[in-house]
Structure formats: structure tokens, C-alpha cells
Length: 201
Image 1 (cartoon, rainbow, N blue to C red):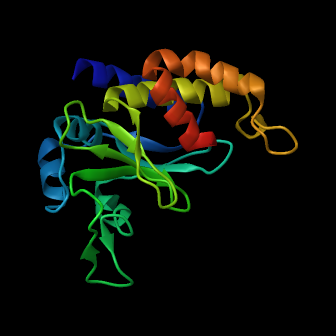
Image 2: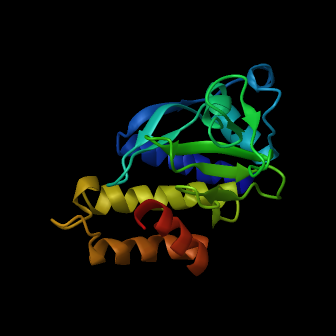
């Protein structure tokens, strides 16, 4: 867990440095067990993240749609429309959504989930949009938060978050270039392309 701890602590510190919305708080292990929904699976990495750095009102502007991070008590609600479907309660289980996928973030309109696979080693991270199948954006949870840190440093540190596009809302080539230099060594060529597609494709 050392790599994940370093990735998370750096991410949270970067979030604080740029004075982004919300904050992260630790909770006691007993509290984690009490609050965790019975019908939501977990993994060692997901437990580690949410017990030490539980998000509270976290919203990160991307230059396009803002991303929100879910707390433990929001995990079930986050899955409505994905794992559980229907117009009203009681919802039915989706035939296409694996039960071991847990959504940890989404866009503000709740149409672009970021999810983890709790059955795979390292807890890989996927993302999706519209009706398409989610695609891998990070091999493990540590890489995801490391990439998010580098992404914030480019979006907020090198650019004003709302100035990453030209007057026609086309992403600036210089932004693309800096993001590639910062994130590709972390994620690799293929997963960086997926990561970029999720945020700016």
C-alpha cells in the first residue's frame, strides 16, 4: 500500500494547494465497516482510499464537465442507473453491469462514471460515457491518483482551467502537449489516450 499511500497523499496535498472545492477526511476502521453498504463490494485499495481520504463535497473543474468524487454514503446512489436500473424503487439489477464494479466519481450530470474493479489486483480504474462500455484508464488505483495529481498540476498550474480551449472550444495544442508529457510516463501510451478521451475526447 506504500505506493497508493504516496499517490493519495500527494493528490490530496495538490488538491489543497490549488484550493479546489471540498476536502478529504479520515475515518476510523470500525466506522468504515459500519458505514459500508452490504451490497457494495470492496478491495484492499478501495478500503485504504476511503478510510484515510474520504471525499467530502469534492468537485474538480476540468475545463469541460466537472468531476465529483463520492463518499461512502453515496456509493449506492452513485450506482443507480448503472448497476441498478428502473424508474423507481425497488430497482432491478442490470444484466450488463458487473456487481464488482464500484463507481467512485462521475461528472456533475452523472453520465460519465469513473469506476474501479474490486475483483482485480491493484483495483484498476475504468471510465465511460453515454451508453458505451467502460474502458481502462489506469492499471491500478495508485496510478489513477498519481495521474490525477499530474493532471491538476497542468490544468491549474500551467493553465487557467477555463482557458485550455480556443474561442471555438477546441482544446489548445500546447495543453495537449503538456498533458501528454506529464501523464504518459505514468499511464503508458494506450491508457493515456483513454484517460484523455474520457476528459477531452
